[in-house]
Amino acid sequence: MSRLTHLLLAGAVIAVGLSVPKPIAFAEAQKAAVSEPAQVAPAIRVVAATRQELVETLAVTGSVVPRQEAAVGVDVAGLIVRELNADRGDVVRKGDILARLDRVGMETQLAQLDATRAQIEANVAQAMSQVADAEVGVRQAGEALQRARALQDKGVASQSTLDSAVNGADSAKAKLETAKKAVAAAEAQLGVNAAQRRDVEEKLARTEVKATADGLILARNATLGGIVSASAGPLFRIAIDGNLELAATVAENALASLRPGMPVTVDVAGAQSVEGKVRTIDPEVDVKTRLGTVRIALPAEAGIRSGNFAHGSIETLRRNSLALPAGAVLYKAREAYVQKVVDGTVVTTVVETGARAAGLVEILSGLAEGDEVVARAGTFVADGDKVTPVREGAVGAISQ
Image (cartoon, rainbow, N blue to C red):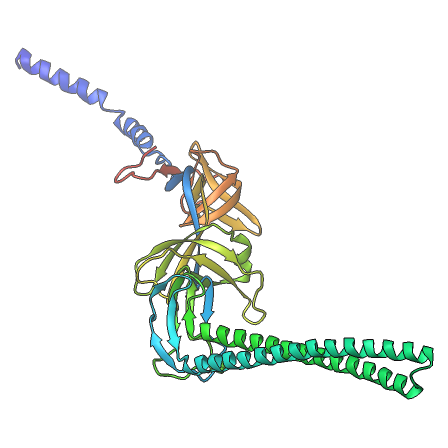
């Protein structure tokens, strides 16, 4: 056997000797390799509390109506409409003649009253001349009475002569009083005539139907050739200054949140959206419907007409505040809370909430800007759980 063979056999023996304890070493290695798997916290999406502009709105509906309305009519009946100068949709100025009525009959009355006045004035002149004659008669009768008394005192005139003079003086005074009353009666007739004339003149002036205010004509009830009737209502209706507004109904529990001046976006049927403002809030709530009325001033826009149906969105709140998505806030009784994530641990935190708008909830206290909370609170985790936060914008990987 060669030396090389002896060396190979010796190496084999050594190798066999070293491999004798193999079962013990292998078992220990297997035991070390089979260890507990590492605990990985579940991935949970989180959102940060940030300052955002909150806009809160209230939806309302109603009809477009004139802000102020003027009725134009006449209090004379039986007159025929001879001329029409305005129609629906016309913009008019105060004093514009909208229509003319027949005035022939009134002009005839005016001429008759003028003739009557001339006759009364002649009667007054005649009565005044009678007063003058009666005054002369009184003076003459007084002089005759004085002479009769003087003669009787001298014993020349008889008692009968004195009595006749006294009666003549009394008769003259009575005629004077009668003449004066005739003058007063004639002058009174002049006053009646003047009053009648003024009445006819006023009615004559009203045959010209004039606009009582600047504005837009909404309705015309007058027809050419038609007979005016006092019971038929106004001949024209005018929206003063052409101002229109939305009279919207609002639930009574929402009225307290409204204030004059709040901006409103109004969608009018058949027209583009316009921006208005709350003008006034009616002080009375309908006892049957429990609705109040809010009046919203509208701009003068083409396409908006009185009677249009419209939707309004009243902006009741606009401010920059700390906010979270609504899904991140839980409510229990009257208390609100969020699941805040601090160093990978869920911490239930009570918060004070404010306005709610566009899926956001205003956080008044309990959180600071930048604090992270579980986006869908209460769904998968509870207080004290360990989580791996996944932030907004992380796609395909976990952002820590």
